[in-house]
Length: 211
Image (cartoon, rainbow, N blue to C red; front, side, top):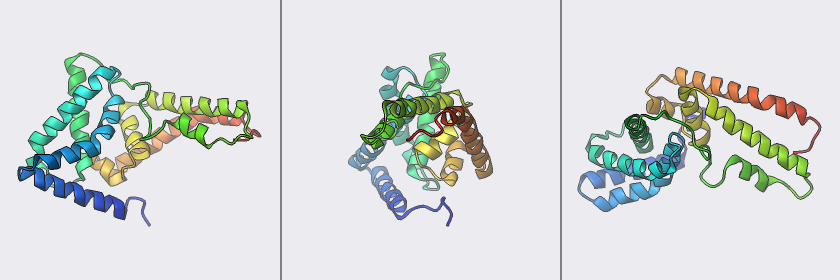
């Protein structure tokens, strides 16, 4: 089975989004408020990966939803709502950075998951029998992964982020990045190879140690 097939939960979420969009276009502002509540955190995390100035993140997120609201009548449902909203968020962030004559940078907490970052996740999985050396090594690997992602070219970083962190399918990433699926797969493969090359030496140094 292809890993790009939407899950029942994803299909249900898409149906729910479509219903809320229809209600918003019909004049129900509370329906749009529900969409904002649903996606605000994800959009802020996304913007946080592009903008180092944390004070700007909330402003850009707010501008993203304002633009989305104004353009909602143009949403045709050909892509999932979040994919469509993602595009608006990226374009809004890039415009803000251009206006400020800044270059996109990755914030310190750029690659946090919805609950915890990779380091915290690893630490939470550690057992009491694991040594301080193993804990330190786990932290080092998480730091190297984050640093490796920051060093990726923008198109590779965006593709691997959408796949591994946002959990989008290749088809959704193709829509979000406006490029063929083959290009998406190539970018993700290259990103994984680059990250693996950075992590592999540390893993080799830890051979024989318990994780």
